[in-house]
Length: 203
Length: 203
Image (cartoon, rainbow over all chains, first blue to last red; front, side, top):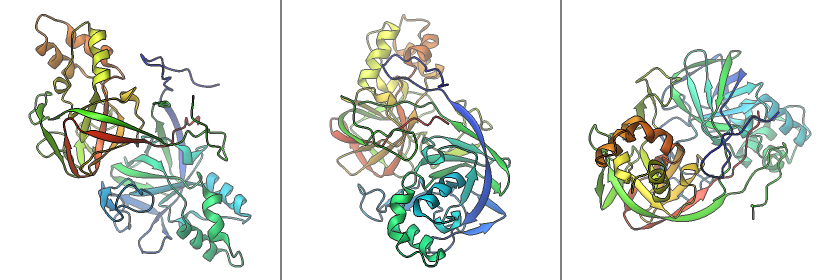
């Protein structure tokens, strides 16, 4: 049953806050220049992201995802942490006709389970971990050919995957997040999820 | 006519990116401890916000708006810049039965015009100014009694406004934003607005 809507002074219907939970399946750090990440037992987070990860920092250089900025111009870093879901990865694998796509092939820092439509989690959603660490979702991640090449490298005999990856992974590639509160995240633990009020702006 | 929806592999309907424009009516800096802001001809922005404004910084202390954090714990600062619309302020004034509510009474750094339902602009919306400055919308601003007291202080003979303000300004109090790209913003200039894809997560 859909949630009741909140009445507002405008014509915009507001959906109330939702509270859910999920579990951490894997944590990894993307330390090198290549896209792949390395699995760890525990991920340590500061306000700038994951120390040693190439996405750490309050700022990042603009890339092809934000074509309205001059390339490499320093911008607010909304990509400190990359999170995918096991369910979405299974759909990507199905779309590609392969047995599996592992989260670290895509450079993900976290793989989670138990949250439906994970890649559609709205901006402003927050994940609360047992240590006190809190991540804030900043937006859907976009697939790219670099990740596709890494998937192809791991699946010998599946030439052409790199080119097919972007289409197969569209809107399934997880989300990017910033660190609201530092702490640590361990593989196997559960987290709480808070999804903020939602509405559609018509403009 | 509503925009056509984008089909996805899930059941979630995605509304496409929208491009609009607006104009800057006022810019101001909130330098002191009180909520009010001081009008300027030009606002200068760095990656940390507005130098000299009490909301500047990559981090901010947690307050009553984020009750899931310990009070004053340092969190990611999504409130570097506060933006209201003249249209929303006129509705607030009507709700209060007063002639006007000025943006600087509420501590706004920017007042804009020409964008309908401004306070409902989705997270991730971006405002592009002629200097190259870019602001990223981080969420709706919540009214508080402190702002109400400031409104009452400016409207002699209107006792009780402070208590009525929060209800009168609910979902009309504008948005908070972070600085994606530094630059300056001048009163009277126009800006371009990009609203990202929108959808409702059902969970």
